[in-house]
Structures are given as structure tokens and as C-alpha cells.
Length: 150
Image (tube, rainbow, N blue to C red; front, side):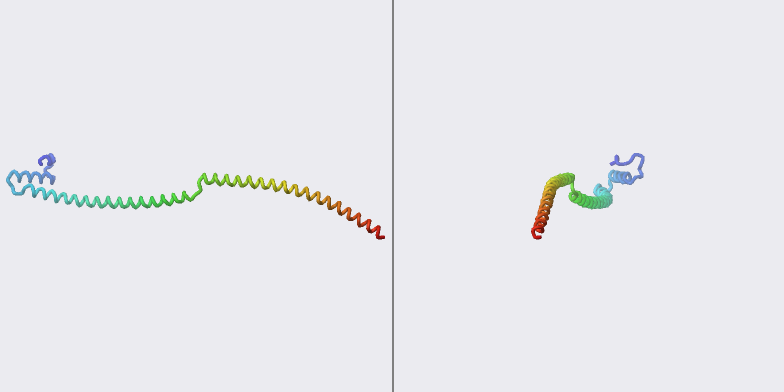
């Protein structure tokens, strides 16, 4: 216990307690080791109270960190859902391919329709020519009939 005394510092509480204890033991005092132990335990209780306060503060900090972590997890979950709802490059590529195929199909339909329209125009011109011939024949027949009726 003498080694617990700080050299040159006999005024420290630990040094005086240890010195008194050693003096009492050597002098046959009734103060004894149990009483010294209970005094040390009292000093330890003060440390335990401080330790309790420190642990309480640490627990509060952990609770704050836990709440912060939960809030961050919630925010991350929201962002994940938001990102999952957004279209991906693959979706755009698929959509682009689908639209391109539809455009090619429509272009083929337009080409077919233009060819058909050209054929219908040709038929219309032939029909007009035949109509003109038929009108000419009708006019000629009407003139002949008018001549015969006179």
C-alpha cells in the first residue's frame, strides 16, 4: 500500500488514507482492514454513480443514433421505392425497340396503301375514259335517234 503514495505528494487523499491505515495497523489500532475496505467501497460507489451517469448518457446517445439510423433507413427505403418505380435503361430500350417495330409496320402499311391508292387512281382514270367513251356513244345514239325521228 505504500507504493500507492505519490512520491513527494503526501497531501493527496489516497496517500493520507494509505499512510493512516499503515500507521494504524502498525500501532495495533482497531481500525482494521474491513473498515478500510468499506471506505474504499464508498469511494467506489461514488464512481459507480458517475459510471451510471456516463452509461445513461451513452445509452441516450445510442438511442439517438438508433432513431437516426431508423430515419435514415426509412429515407433509404423511400428512395429505393422511388428508384424502383422509375423506368430503367432496359425498359427504355425495350420501348424503343417496340416503337421502332411499330413504326416499321406502319411504314410498310403506308407503302402498301400508297400502292393500292395508285392502283385505284389508275382504275379511276380507266373508268373515266370508259365513261367518256360511253357518253360519246350515248350522244351519238341520241343524235341518230333524233335524225330518225324527224
